[in-house]
Length: 251
Image (tube, rainbow, N blue to C red; front, side, top):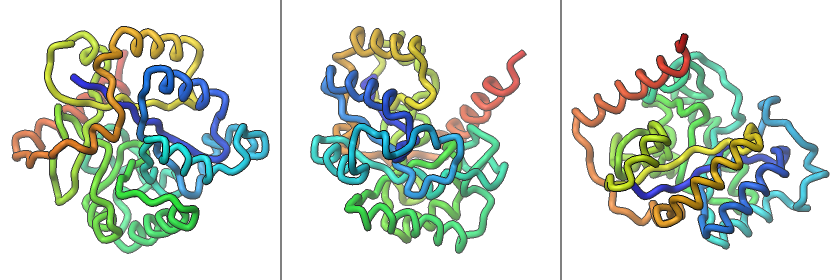
């Protein structure tokens, strides 16, 4: 499978040293990832460095520069504050910024996030749900606000569901890396803020060993999505539930 990269939790006060370290690795291998930008970060866990100490003087200008260089930007929620313990349509986690909340409240939060981005010259139709959690009200609100694509789901190619195009993430990275002959596309999810030296070394090894399989996210967005049937949707849901159980209830 071809492998693209997405980076979550991009904020003015993220861990810039780790972001830049991973960016250098992407630059070395000519990879242009998708980055999920939190419009109004209120999550204390993401307050890591003072924006004044960042290696860039203007966060939003830097994002626009990355975009001009071929990076893709997604709106990553609104505030990144988890307000419910609902699992939503893609049950990987039992916490959510959106799932379980009424349509109007979701619409207003998403609209405010989109306005913040657009006021800073960042425009995107790609959405990245915090904790991978969303429900049908989220989808409805996103469509009303002009979003057409989401980075989530399981599968081997982009697919259409609920009038949105989904770009699947990896169910298990090790399986993708072992099966070099399998056809299709997937995305590895990166949280640079929480990476340690061993994590960086691992990705350096992955990029070196699989450089012919790495693609930029723009290449993924150019693919023609396919409509997926009921069986594929049920299979995805069961895979997500299984992964949730395996991750949270290991002995």
